[in-house]
Each structure stands twice: as structure tokens, then as C-alpha cells.
Image (tube, rainbow, N blue to C red; front, side, top):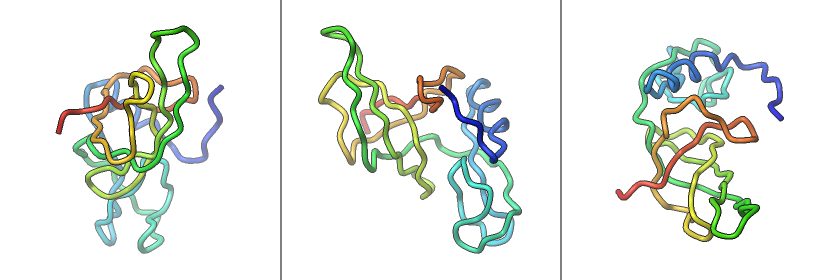
Length: 126
């Protein structure tokens, strides 16, 4: 079930559907923000502009939801720390027990969302 958000995420999802990763950057202090941010966490400004991001980061913390069927795919609900600095909620596709804090991830760049309404990331080699 997707919950309504007071933060307009349409630019984020439109970019993902077009194979791009956008995140907000404060127009006042330049600090990168989580896609769910309505204000700058650094200076409090509401002047945020959607800019291209790398779409990569590391798992900061996680909760693994085990697959319903043996051998199935686990969905990991994670806080991902983006390489630009901010953290965001995401779903990581991985075999059970493989995802762990500190592992590198990359945005899947697909409009598909997890059952929680989160963007998908995948484990990456680097």
C-alpha cells in the first residue's frame, strides 16, 4: 500500500522511468537532499532543484523480508546512503542473507516500485 506524501516526488519517478536518477539540491547552500525532502536539512531553505545524481551508494541499515517460497528473492528494505551524502529509503533485490550494511548498491532505474512504494536498488560489485 502506497501512502500519500506531502513532498512532490513526480520529478524523481519520471526521471527513474526514463533511466535517470535525480535528487534535490539546495539552491542556497548546495547541499544534496533525500528525494523525500521538502526543505534543506542543512540551512532550512525550501529552494530545492532536481539535479542529476549518480544513483549509487551504500546500504546504511536494512531489514530483510524473506521470500514466500524457498529459493525466492528476498526484498531488503534499506536506508541507502547515496554517494552525494543524503540517505533515502529503498528496496534492494538480493538473495537471502547476501545484503548487508556497507555493501555498495546502484539504482535499478525502473519505474517498478516495491510493495512499500520504494524504488529498487541492486547490489553492485564496486
